[in-house]
Image (cartoon, rainbow, N blue to C red; front, side, top):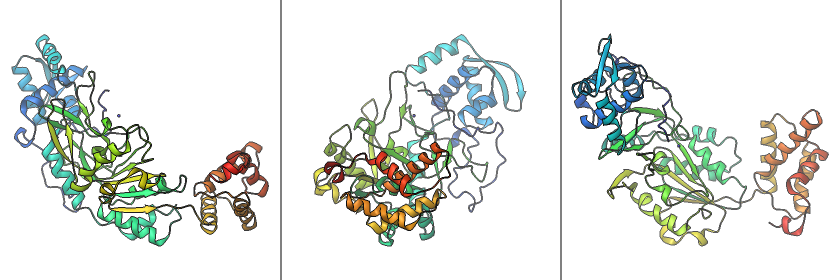
Length: 443
C-alpha cells in the first residue's frame, strides 16, 4: 500500500487566481502557497525532489513537474531555475509564462543517484509534521456532532435495539474507543464498519510528511476515498477524503504499528493507526493476531489515553504524531482472558453483542429478504426458527443472510424464479450447516 502512487486528481498547471476560500464552502481547506517562503519544507529538500521528478519525465516541462509535485508554477519554476544554475538540468526552450522545457545533464543524473541512496520518494511535495498535526487536531476537534438521523441511516441495514444505537451514538460523538465482544457471526464487524458511515464531515490529509529530510507517505488509495473539493484554491499537497475506515485482523503485528520502510523503498509508509486519523480503526478478531495480545494491548495504552502516538525513525529518533480516531476492538474471546483491568479502564465504551432471540432472528431474516426483493411466508420462517430449537442450535445474526443467499444460488442454478420455500431452505440449511451432530449443534 513500492512505487509511489500517483494520486487521482491532477493539479492544474497554472496557479489559481488569488482570493479567499469562502468559509462556508471549505472551512479547513489549506491555503494555496504562492511563494517558496509560504511552504514549510526546506528549499534544499524541494530542489532534490524536483530533480528526481525531472529524471522521471520523458518530456519535462515546468508544468509536468508542478503536476507531479502538486505545487504551483511559480514555485516550481523557482526550484527548476535553481537546478539550472547548479547545472543539474538544461533548458530546452520556452513553453509559456513560468513554463520551460528541461532535460537532465550528466551532473544531474549523478546527483539523483546520490540522493536516492537516502530517499527515493517521488510524488506530491510533503508538508511538515507540525502542519499535519495541527490540521488533523483542528478538524477532528471541530467536527460537527453526529445527528440521530445520520446514525440511523448508517445503521439502517442492521437490526439493533434503541439502547444499542444510543451507545453507538455516544461512541461516535465522543471519539472514544469501543470494546465489542460476543460470539462470532453476530454483527460485531458489521456494527463497526457501519459506524464509519455515520462520521460527519470530510477531512484533509497530506499526501506525505517530511521529518528531518525523511518522508512518511500518508495517503493510501486503499484506505482513503477522495472527495472533490468545492474550490480549486487550496494547497494541492493536501487531499480531501471521507473519514477513513481502516480494518486490520489477524495479520496485525507490533512491527506494523510503527514506521515501515525497506532497502528498495527508501521512505516510510505511515502505520495503519496513522492512516486512520480522522476516522475509525477496527482491530478485528482481537486475540488472534500474530503477536501476544498483551503486547498488542500494552502498545495501545498511551495512544488511547493521551491521543498521541510515538513512532521511531531509522535514526532512532522518536516523533510524536496525533492519534485522533475512534478505535474499535472486536473479539469473540472472553474479555477476561485477553485484557487486564489497566487496559479496560482506558476503554471508552464496552458492549456485548449476543446471539439474536427468535423474534430478532425473524426480523433480521425478513429485512434481508426484502433487501434482496424476496417475499417470505411467515409460516415458512416460523418452521425455520423452530428447526433451530429442534436441533438445539444457537442462531447467529449472520445466518439469515447466508441461508437466503444459498436459496438464491439454488434458484439460479435451477433457472427458477427466486423464492424462499421449505424445500429451498432445507437444501440451503444442509449445505450451510452440514449434518446435524451434537457437537455442531452446541458450538
